[in-house]
Structure formats: structure tokens, C-alpha cells
Length: 191
Image (tube, rainbow, N blue to C red; front, side, top):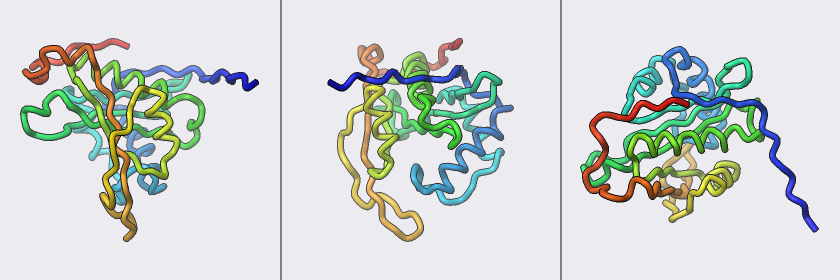
């Protein structure tokens, strides 16, 4: 009989990202870009590229920090489509520092991002994941996402066409009366 092994998660705190987190967020994002396993982006980002995203209060960007408050991961929401009918849907991205992977950071961080999406009034969050990124697909399943399809040859990295798996998670609490889109003033959220 197999006995499940409990996940040992080191002390992790999550909170909304601050402008002072931009260097760490950028460094972690650039790890993902360099690895060519989580994004179609191929050019490293600069701190200045991430500052507007951190400042955009419509789309939460959360960080995970270790016991010394070093940022070890980030997850953020972004616009899905510009049409009004999609106002309650957001895309998500999540990146964990290479040194902090396989320790439960992603699960804590993605759970916090879902809570932030709920508080911000989103009714659905979704993303596209490379089929070869089995760790991200497992994380999404563990956090209640379902795989809804696959886009074939969705983009190229280094001249190679790659497919993506589409994942989504509904936020049932925000589905009632969702036709009106997002609230005009986001709720203040304390973690």
C-alpha cells in the first residue's frame, strides 16, 4: 500500500508585489526565458519592463518570499482580451526561482494568486503551458485547473514550433452577475 508523503513546505509568505521587488521578479523571469521551457519570450527583460506590470492594480501580481523576505517566486494576472465580454477573465503567469523549485512554492503562490483574482472580481483565470512543462501542468491540476485543449504549433522558440496546453480555472463565487465585468475599484487585499 502506498502511503502519501506529506509535502514539506519551507516557511513561505506571499504578498502583493512592490516596485522594490522588480529586480528579483525580473531575475526570476529571465531564468524562465533562458530555460526556454515556460515562455515564448526569448529576450531577457529589464527591471523597467516589469515596473508597469507591478504598478497596474487591475491585475494582481503576487510574490512568494522566504523567511528572510527574499523573493523566490512570482505569479501575476494580465489582460486576456480587450472586448468587454472578456473583462472578467485574466491570464496568469507563474515563475519560481530555480533554487526554490520542488519545495511547494508554486502551489502556495498560485493559490494566493487565485485568491487575489477572486478578490479582484475575476470569474476565470487561464494560461497556456508547454506540454513538456510537466511540473507546471501538475501544479495547475493540483490547484484546480482543468486542461481544455491544445493549440498546435502556437509559436516558435529558436526556430522550433511548439504546442501549448490551455488550462482554466473558474472562480464560482464571481460567476453570479458576471455579465457586468470587473468592478471599477479593485478591493484592497491584505495577506
